Image (tube, rainbow, N blue to C red):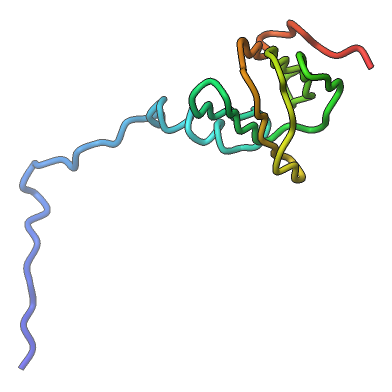
Length: 111
């Protein structure tokens, strides 16, 4: 014996509509993991993890310049050194005083 479930089509209730456009914070998260922007993680003032860079432009014990998809990132400090250098990521050690991030074309590398 089979049972049939009757649906009331003429009930007049409409399904709730989804928003036409996606949630903005979700789009920012997708752009963040897309790989074009550099990600920096500071651990105190003596260690900085940089991910998604595309190359080392300049290196000294006071300044490190990295190329990113958005421009040139500059790290200033004292006694700076590079550690855990891998493709696309590295760790800067030393007394870090300042990190300049590229924004809207500033610090673009001309090379």
